[in-house]
Amino acid sequence: MKKLDRNQMAARVARDIPEGSYVNLGIGLPTLVADHLPKGREIILHSENGVLGIGPRPASGEEDEDLINAGKEPVTLLPGGAYFHHADSFGMIRGRHLDFAVLGAFQVSVAGDLANWHTGGPDAIPAVGGAMDLAMGAKKVLIMMEHLTKKGESKIVERCTYPLTGAHCVNRIYTDLAVIDVKPDGLHVVDMVDGLAFEDLQRLSGVPLRRLATAA
Amino acid sequence: MIDKFFASAEAALADIPEGATIMIGGFGNAGMPAALIDALIAQGARGLTIVNNNAGNADSGLAALIAAKRVRKILCSFPRQADSWHFDKAYRAGELELELVPQGTLAERIRAAGAGIGAFFTPTAHGTLLAEGKETRRIGDRDYVLEYPIHADYALIRADRADRWGNLTYRKTARNFAPIMAAAAKCTVVQVRETVALGALDPEVIVTPGIFVQRVVKIAPSLRKAA
Image (tube, rainbow over all chains, first blue to last red; front, side):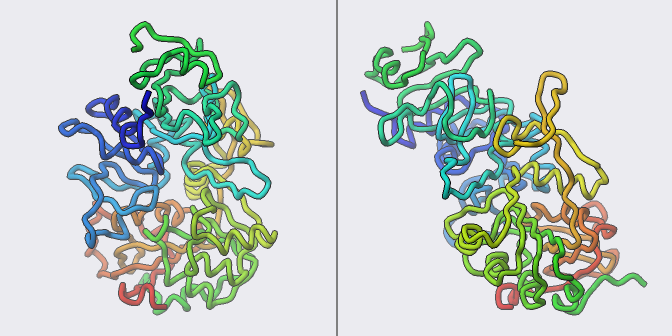
């Protein structure tokens, strides 16, 4: 069994995003998805700071400090792109106009609760940004994260121990081991990396998983 | 004749009193009114409440205002960053109060103030630490949190072009919070790259009508970072 690397995870998420989708990619790992969207599919990327139709990274020397994404990285605008103010941008999010938000996570619970903004540590300075709005607002919330912590503990948990970003908001989890749907009756394994047995995934995850008939 | 043009940032900010609530536009460097923030530091008002998405980066702008101990309280969504060391230090020393607000709720609270809305229910943050102690209501099949507007005495924003009535256009993602902050503050001061004659801005592309703007200062781009 070979875990997916970060680019393979991004490619796996990108594969599932259909033509015509409006998508917000969170800061960090989810941003990589942009590099793997299939050529020829028209997919419109949104960023919270007020832009739709984000294009590729600008060439070195072509950066414009007035054109950035929510990660404050320089971006470009595709033909057909648009700018708008922050209240409109979050109206798009909260008003359920975005088809997908792809977000990173510390933990996801079996009920689809998401924790990704704050460790809750006594000395930690909290910062939330747009995470809570995206979690509650996008039509589908896709999570991209490593399956296990560095200590080998499952990041898919019975109940989140970190403070919540949103309750019952996650639709699908993409990890370096599997793709898992969050449904009212529990977690359904949609896909697993080559060479991983369902029983091993179950053991590593530590929460009850169901196996879709179509899962490999 | 209406003329909102001011000769300098200093003149435009001269009357800011101790304890004022000031919205500062910008998301990162995009749209940050650097010359106005520099002038605010030089002006010297203390005990300020600042509304911004962040809490300052590196050593200039809002970070320098915090380092100069002018800020009593900050409302923002994302204070902690790799280079937010002035905020981190002041926060850990208990020298300033933080009200952490989800970014969309921050934007909507600002919008509500400018639009005369008394309060609103939003689904964001329901069931989280940031909704603790707040009124909630179930409407239809969703749970919502009651949020109140954020009003300000001043808004300091950056736009691209302005005429003497204060009509504004913006450039790319530098727009971000500026239009809603302009509407939410009693006195909106704008740093612009270019001033133009009345009638020179196409009415179809004016984003912020002059009714939301009180003062305009032209800052030559080459001087933007030098002040």
